[in-house]
Image 1 (cartoon, rainbow, N blue to C red):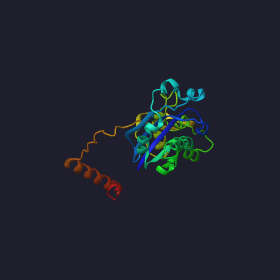
Image 2: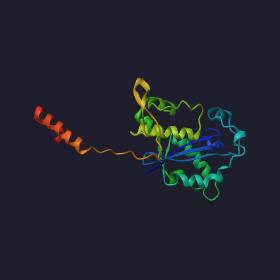
Image 3: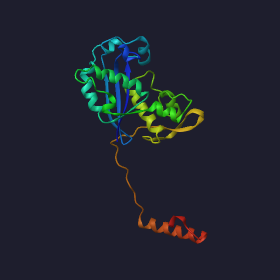
Length: 235
């Protein structure tokens, strides 16, 4: 199962008003494990970034001036997401911008994100699991004990990485447990913190019991059986 956790940053809130994507960040999950494969690009939107948007993500017009325009990165982006399930927080927002950008490309005006990928909206999922509560990314990090202290401003790749952790915790599995300490979520509930494990780490060494150890184990089971009349280990 291939999933792409995706986030974008934009010049404003509404593509119908001519706003454009300025950053795309994606991380890949294979069978619910972080593969280490990412897609990240800044984009020249060919228009100015609104001050309100810049206050959120901190990406300036000057920084974007020498970045590629969307049509030059579109092929690589489409190849990266093609056929995957997209995992997006508030998916209608990002997908709306993506569809707007695809529609501007010569020859692929009919292309829609949903024609290339299935889409999972984690905001909708969070609202089902936690009705009546805050379900933005910061609130979910607090709820699931995920450290996002390094997130001073929004950034597409950083937010995608954080969302991957949130999604895995919210759907019943995580990359790893940090057993050295626990974080408190809402209501003081304890949650284990996430720590990513390398996809290329060495396999764990398997140590088998020796013949003497097995013999001692059987003697111990005999003792239990004699004292209690039965031994669950042997049933």
